[in-house]
Image (cartoon, rainbow, N blue to C red; front, side):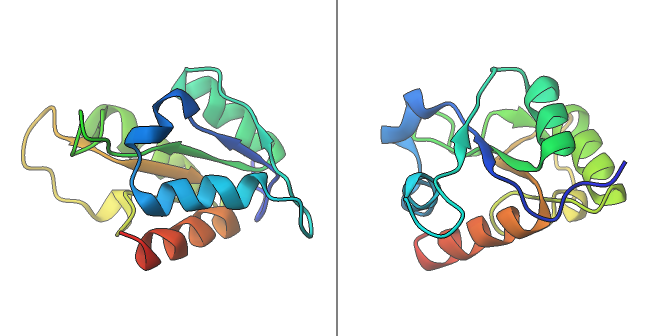
Length: 135
């Protein structure tokens, strides 16, 4: 399987929008904007694997940012994020924590949590630009 380089789906629990970092909020607004090939479609099942699978087939991005309640993120690096990031990279996609590749993060604990953004390469790179401009 090959991850589409770009997509038109974003998957995030928008119910927590108020608690997201500014860069992620701005990216969501960008996804919803009527311009060029947007708005993107919002699809969130609430299951990492299901959302990931759909995005891998159709092209899209999965976002699970850090929040005030979970400042390190909620998903676990070793047994949730790393397996998905490995598959994404092998298929031409990309997975980051907002700053760097998920696969380059050295674990500090078994249940370490991280922010997780994964999907079509172009969409993840666009998100990274938004996070860089508004950390």
